[in-house]
Structures are given as C-alpha cells and as structure tokens.
Image (cartoon, rainbow, N blue to C red; front, top):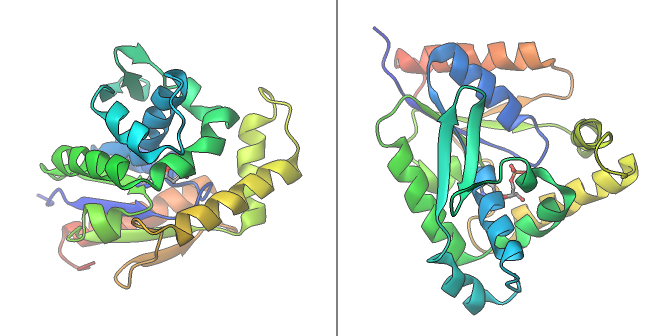
Length: 228
Ligand code: DC
C-alpha cells in the first residue's frame, strides 16, 4: 500500500494550480486545499465589512472576527465566511484585484498558515499556493513549481472571466503581471521556486498531460523514490 504523502504545489497566478490539483486529488483520493481561496475569503470579508485593506492594524483587529471555513462538498471545495458561502464571490475581479495586498500582511499569513498546517497534518493532501513548499510544508515529500508564461496564464484567466465580466485580454494579462510582481517581491513569504521543487511548465501541456505528470510524480514520491 502506498504512503499518503503531503504535496506542495506553488506557482504564479493562472498557472493552472487549482484546476490541476483538484483533478489530481480526486484521482488519488487526496484532500485538496486551495490556500489562495483562503486569502480570497479573508479579502472578501474585509471588503464586505468596509475595512480599509491598507490599514494593517485595522486588518489585524478584524481578523479575529472573521470565521473562515473550507468545506469539502460533492462539487468540490467551498469557502464560507461567518456562515455565508462566498465560493463564487471570491472569484470576482473586485476581490482578485485586492487579494495580493491582503496576502502581503503578516497577521493574515500567520492566521492562515496555522490553519493550513493543521488541515494538512494527517497527510494525503495537496496544498496549492505561493509559500507551501517554502513556509507551510517545508518537509512535504513532493514539491512542484507549476508555471507558464504571462501570456498563457492571462489568456486562461480571460477565458474564465470573459462571459461574466466585461474585461479585455490585455487588462487580464496586466493584472496577472501585477499580481506576479506583488507576490514575488513582497517581504512576507514571497513566491519562490524552492531548490527541491520539481518545475513543471504548462505552456505546451494540456490539462490532461499536466494531471498525468503530477500523478506520476506523486506515485513515485509515495514509494519514497523522490525525496523533495
Ligand atoms: O491562487 P489565487 O489566485 O487564488 O491566490 C490569490 C492570492 O493569494 C494571490 O495573489 C497570492 C495569494 N496567495 C498567497 O500569498 N499565498 C498562498 N499560499 C496562496 C495565495
């Protein structure tokens, strides 16, 4: 019987981390934890409460009043804030354009990293985010850095958004590049590709090919063949 390991998947916005991780987790019977959705949930809660998100003290004070929950449902993971399902609302461009600023704050990260480690403690988990291999699960048996060019990632995000929001491809690419810059250059837990991560570039891979690449890497790591 294979070991059930911890898998850390990091990479920039729009690299396909969550779509891929979701499918891979389902195939392997692993729990998938979308840590970006947690940062989005906190951002939604702050905006909804009218908190000025650049006021670090106000954000820190508000955190204790935000009850964030990830629920595993038939249809996937849902995100709840103070008893309300915000799974759809956290994907809007409004939340997207504010989330990097919230995710850069130490108090926010401390709260969420603690929750993430707790959820991952039993193994058999795939966590995706920006700091999973570096901070959240530095001892993960497998670390993957999933990436693609800004153009590829912007185009994917635009395809997801274009029917519900009036937004151009150029604007989405600009947002992707801005988020990259904020996520990679912030002081608190910036997005980095750690030395022991396997880099998977998805520009020329289909979803199915990327899923298979990850399934193969995880199977190998479960056997102890890869110490990452
Ligand atoms: O993956 P995503 O687009 O849903 O992530 C939303 C934002 O949260 C992104 O701008 C970076 C931040 N984030 C983070 O700082 N650390 C994580 N582990 C996950 C996401």
